[in-house]
Length: 329
Image 1 (cartoon, helix red, strand yellow):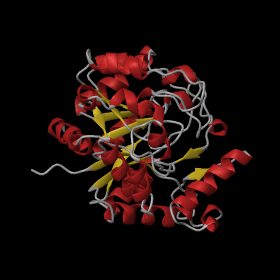
Image 2 (tube, rainbow, N blue to C red; image 1 turned 90 degrees about the horizontal axis):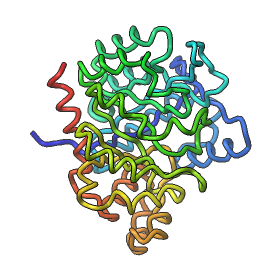
Image 3 (cartoon, one colour; image 1 turned 90 degrees about the vertical axis):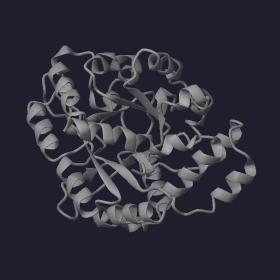
Image 4 (cartoon, helix red, strand yellow; image 1 turned 60 degrees about the vertical axis):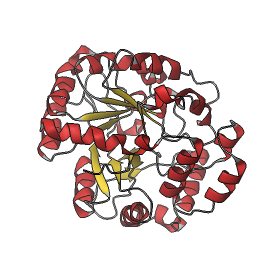
């Protein structure tokens, strides 16, 4: 069976205009600027930030997948933070995308979109919601521990991780620094905190390969690479590494022995540019100049990753993990 080329890290964003219950907030001038830049990069009118974002964003995304060299994209739900005693903290969130909305979109576009749910393991109904997503055959769970207030070392979450392992659900977890979304506790981005989940047998993808986002972020990529030696169920993605602030991570993960654990991801709708990789000496300027002509963000990121030197298996490895997941269900 031919393995599909899959982008494992694609965000959904919505405004609830279609009844989706999605919402987003741009509380500062910087966030407003970033939001406008992303919408422009997608080729959508700025008016969608005021109304109609649900439909236009989703349809544009499915079209970009169809018109790219990719076969599919994993689209991500987004939960909100919860306090240590299980209280929801929506005021500390920047956007929310319900699991049901993601599942419905994946049903509408089954060839292009693969659903990933998002469930804070400390919310009171976490196990019930996990079972709902398992019943819906959702293969991936996405979390941003540093932004959602999730300490993976908390033993109260062990039944949650064990259930994920039983059914083969893959965890895509943010690791490293973060600039786009409000950070609750930066230390929760340390990949070493994934050890308990890995020990439970969950297959984990460390998003962004645990690298820096901000200038003064800690760089945990080498720690992550050392963890590969001990955990065969640990992988990482190269999402957002074609952005100037994250391109520094490329040098760590391009060696062939490390690439065996790397999975292709874009972090769509984060802007994609070859400038960062070029400045880091990982991309020829001629390639950057040629690839920048593509208006399709997913395609541009895919072409840049190929030109940078990511091997073909990087683009199909997510499908390998999904096929393994299916054998457990």
